[in-house]
Amino acid sequence: MTETHELRIAVIGAGPAGVYSSDIFLRQLKKLGEELGLGTAARIDLFEKLPVPFGLVRYGVAPDHPSIKFIASALEKTLDNPDIHLYCDVEFGKDVTLDELLERYDAVLFATGAVEDKPLGLPGADLDGVYGAAKFVEWYDGYPTGAREWPLEAEEVAVIGGGNVAMDVARELMRNADDLKERTDIPDNVYEGIKENKARVLHLFIRRGVAQAKFSVQELREMEKLPGVQLIINEDDFDLDEDTIEEAGKDKLTRQMVEELFTIREMAEDMEDDGDVDYEGNTADRKYYVHFNSAPVEVLGEDGKVVGIRVEKTETSADGKMSRTGEFEEYPVQAVYHAIGYKPATAPGIAYDERHAHLANANGDGRITTAAEATDEVRERLYATGWAKRGPVGLIGSTKSDALLIVTNMLEDLSKAAEGGRVAADRDPESIDRLLESRGVKPIDFAGWKKIDAFERAEGAKEGREHKKVIDPEQMRALAHA
Image (cartoon, rainbow, N blue to C red; front, side, top):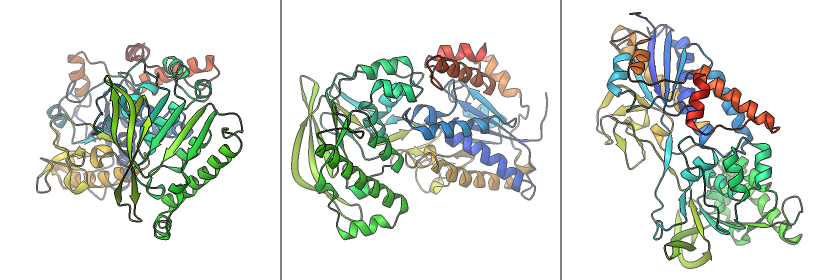
């Protein structure tokens, strides 16, 4: 057996939160390790249940986000580090247990993200034609275990939500298939599905006002440039009082978002004045309505299927408090998509905070606790970061500040532990490989991922595209192990 003196860290989840944390841990250790009595050497093993890395970047964001390519490229550079070892196609709790990791690693960090929708919770939510955003996103992003076909028969659709996922879903439902294929890595089944999409009218319902939406400016700019789509807004929604304008102006991102929404209002007016056209002045064959201060209260059905949606007008004060008006309107729709938030994944053997929807951790500092109550004890050597730590809020970039906080706490705890934090009993770096092999588990490492990536690029090049996703997990495994 080979004994090593390096710190050994296991990270569960190879999405942005897990990769950023791995990188920041190694950087901070090099910077502070000597003064903390930890040395500067560490090995990080990054476990991912999917056959490929990058989590949310690859499978949670719409394919037509150009900025995502840069994030994926940065994450890949981080993984190309001899001190980080990638173990894709290895599922925590199934292929390896918490006790087995604690025996081999000085600390375990959970960066497990979120793949489930929060329930809609409205009458009619169980009707045929009501869909959670997460499953639709899995379909158009080619998630390995996601749906391969999607019902796109509805001519009129509703999307509920005031954040970026709602914007992604609405945009993909209004997309032209050829335009999407030309600029993205969508697989053939998604192209064929969107090509057959019958949606011609879309209603986006946002419960609060223009100044309280949670859209990024980037999302709004992508919404502005949809070929064949006319944007339609209610001008009354933009009649903001002085207090609301003052409050929105205090935060730079909110101010920029509101300014962009006013640009969209002007665009919508021009589109109507020019004869119901799209952003390029071409005749629009699809209409995209944006409704602020509109809270859906019921999905209407007949014979078990969606036939409409009932919406209550709301009012939003400058401080963001929403109140009901008792004024209702019904819209004919045959499908409803809800993007009202994700529920981060649970982890076997780790307490879950149901109220805040994340792994139980002490005062939000990332140290895993025995249960979700504030008085519960911290469990040594266990940590959470990203959505697993704070719930499904914030953009991908938010995970960097999270990672720094968690890494700082990890290093502090390791420095206080006996023998400079080296507490795992089994220090043989090949021990985990033998354990997985004994169970017939064949991990996909970084070199295996590069083979999949090379194949995807080659397939894309045949069609004049940069990339074309492989979606079949068995094909991924065959490529990686070839």
